Length: 447
Image (cartoon, rainbow, N blue to C red; front, top):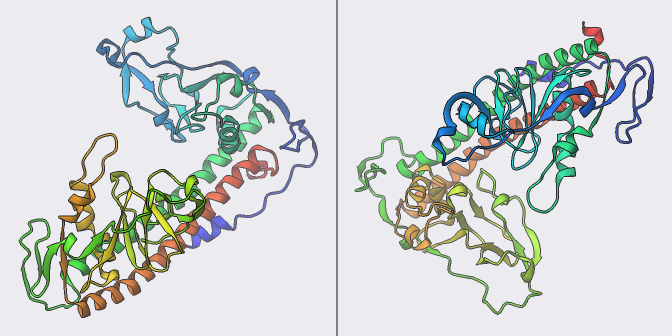
């Protein structure tokens, strides 16, 4: 922890002795001896690549490295997932083998703005822009510059359909730089600092994962074995569930809760005001973190299901199956789409126990196992209703849920602290890159 505190409180670096206008509105002044170069003038060649026909096997499984944008992860690329043949190079003139040290930038799609540097010779697909043989740039300096500008470049690329930058867009970028030697000093400084940041961020993220696993294990054990240390057990009759406490009952989900009982009628007026809950506003702790006020006509077409106080909601779409939430105090007219199942506890079942049962690893795994479909895998609510549900008495349900709310709150506090630390480290990391590559601080004193 001390190392992390020290990283967050890094010493202040001095500014350069003299500055001048950069000629770039957003950048302001730069050190007096820096000169601005367009990317197109700073590299001997800027190009891209291609994707050979995937159904023509003569182009693949060769020995020529081929990079796709999914492999650009701000690292040095020493190997590729796919390899091309000499036949591919002969038949696709846009495929070129780029040398070690080439800087790669993802121009469009989900990975837009991601970066990599070739550690081996390789060719690339059409979504990668390759910056080859720098003349006035140190490639690692440009690498950090582009990292710093990624949010702005993505914003500039926004338009109809997916975000898209062209080679011409990237060639027009103007980068103020010092001498090659000073660029190298800055790049080496950032390499060292980023290694420290990244190590600390990874350690903290690992701690978050361990806490989340501990939380899941705590819930799963409590709702399948109870809290009594010397309890007697009996076979549940379900292989994957194993033994349960002797006095517990094993039923079907449809016998312990109502599923999707209330929905807005089809003739709901367009100007009816609702609170809409999107899948992205359910966090990993099972809480609703936000809703959106919408008129009925503005909501997604499948937004119909009504959620009441103490209902449990669970996504029925496999991609988001861990989106489970307990709605303790919903706003008026809370509506979710048919991508959620809304569960209302029956008599004899506490709503809180139902929530933790649904949140357990055992139940989630059954939902996953019973999902159908390829492009949009999901579980049918009717099938979900047939899944097993295991219950102690109401008094024991209350004891379990009181225990789980107390203990998970402790874990959630630790998770939140670590998440805030990751955010702080990431912001500090980003700010350090920006200050170094724009000349707002002079790192030469360290060399």
